[in-house]
Structures are given as C-alpha cells and as structure tokens.
Image 1 (cartoon, helix red, strand yellow):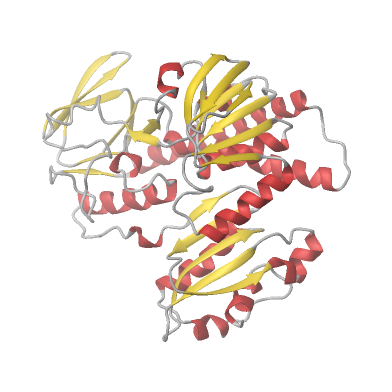
Image 2: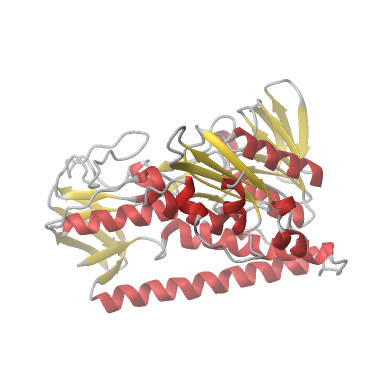
Length: 410
C-alpha cells in the first residue's frame, strides 16, 4: 500500500483547518474567561505570538503521530504529486524524479482550496483566506470577513476577542446559512451584543485600496473600511491536476460524484473528503475514507451522511444534527445549575420530535459544550429512540447534559 501526499500529512484539517483554528479558539475562549474575572491578559502582540507557537506545536505533534501510524501500518508514505496516466496507473513527481505506480484499487482524497468569488478573485493575492490567516505575524486593527458561515463566524469570534474590529458580510438573510433560524439568530444577537458588526443580505461589489487600507463597496451601495479582508465563502475541489480524464473518473465543479460505497465512475477508484463535494467536515471525510477503504479491500459498506454532526466552535458553541423540521422542545441554559455555577448560561437545547410517535429526529444546541452534547442526540437518533426512551436515562446533576432530559420533559 502506498500513500501519496504532496504537502503535509493530515491535509487541510490538521494543517490549516480544524486543528489550528480550534487550538486558537480554545485560547481565545480562555482569554474571554480571564477578562470576565478581571484578569489582565498579555498584550495583543505577545498573545498572538504565543498562540501561533502553541498552534504550531499541536500541529507538529499530530502530524508526527499520523506519520508514525502510516509507518506502523506497513504502508509507504511517498512525498510527491500524483497524476493518473490510465484507469490502473499513476505517476508521482518527487524530488528525485518521477515514479510509476500500478494499482488494483485507488482512493482519491485530494481535498479542496478556498474560493474567491468576484470581486475578491482579482485581488486574492492581497487578501487573506482561511488557510493563510494562520501565517500572519501581526494582527490587523480591523478585518472585514466575507462569509457568515461556520468558518467566518469562528474567525469573527476569535479575532474580536483579540481586539480586532470585525465586520461580517453575509449574502443571505442572517448568519449560518442552512442552519435553524432560531439558532442563527441567537448567535447573531450574541455577536452584536459583544460589538461584532453583522451586515447580511449584501455582497461585496467593489474593492479599493490595499492591505492596511481597504474600502469595500457593498451591494446596497454602503461602504466600509477595514485594514484587512478575510475570504470565508467556501471551498472548491482540487481535482484539476490529477489527470482524472486518463483514469476515467468524472468530476464536476462540485466535486467527484460517488455512490454510497464511495465509488467513482471508475469502479476501481474511490474518493472521499472535500473532493467529493458531499461535505466539508473533517469527520464526514474520515467516515467516507473508512467506507472507501473497506470497499476497496472487498468489503461492502455504505456511507450515510444523514447523521453527521455540524459543530461551530464559537462562544457560545453551536451544534446540530438531523432535521430541524418537527415538534421542537427546548431547555434554556439559564435554568441550568451547572451553567449558572460556571457563569456560562447563554443559549438553549432544542430537540426535534416526530409528531405522534415522538421519535427523535434532530437536535440543535447553542451554548456551553454544544459540540460535545450533540453526540448524545446523535446516539439517540441512530438507535431510533423516542422521547420517552431518552427521558428514562439518568443524567448526573449538576451537568450541562441534563438539559437534554430537561428539554424532553417540557
């Protein structure tokens, strides 16, 4: 078995996505707690330098662990860029030259890259994206974030806590497109209460100036100024350099189409992760990879994306699973003894039930530890539990999770 990687092991999630962002967000949350306790934090410059150092340490450790796991599995890790030459072969360009590899089965996990829609595309070398922002040495005084989805909201939360003036620009009505409106509205209110400016139902139409002094004209003809612009409007699949036509693998602007077994149009080649366009979440890509590997080795497994948790590591945290359509029951953290004791009582738990049977169909949480609590509902939905089944579970007191039972009892 051969693993070909042109950059760093771990891909976008480990090196430029989930891990570095959550490392920084974790420190940002601690900074907020320090401020609430009237503890004077370090200067912004010193803090950012230490945060980047910590982020790099975490990445190096996890990257090393992944490399060791590949080695212990008996697979060869080959550093280079792969390109298919036929439905059963590829070449890898390495520092020492090209190497041909013939295969019985192959799995494509080439990932994605940030999108720059107009007018950002004409100035993309001058603005930041969700990959490059981790490399800046000094924090700008102000940032206009284009995109109010999960990534844009996380960076807004983090940078604001570090003293950066933030304006969020979102083309849809409200933050977090596709998520439950009440959850999205609650997050917006929390942001605006803290001083994060949200401009929704508008797009960036024109950029003037340069890094350090941008002027942005919006679609409603209003303007705003910012020292830097951060593009967080989505990602595109990275398939153009793979020679997919030679491998008889179809691809569209949305990604490589796959079936439930993660097979591409070439039954001997599978795909997983961002490049499929199914989901941009790391845990979804990992689950797809497990299915692809199992089927490549002769098993028969299928990927079910209906129960993929969606998590947002802002404060308050946001998490959801399943549907938001149905009978909703809620519990507000303001009534939680644990939340009040910890001074973190913002938000609520919402559980969606099927009318009549009260089968649990979905859940949405905004508040403390939402990204951990959501898995209780994930297990309940996977097990086909109804409201009465979960109510019979004994939750410890005082805990945040007992709010789940509290919601079902209302």
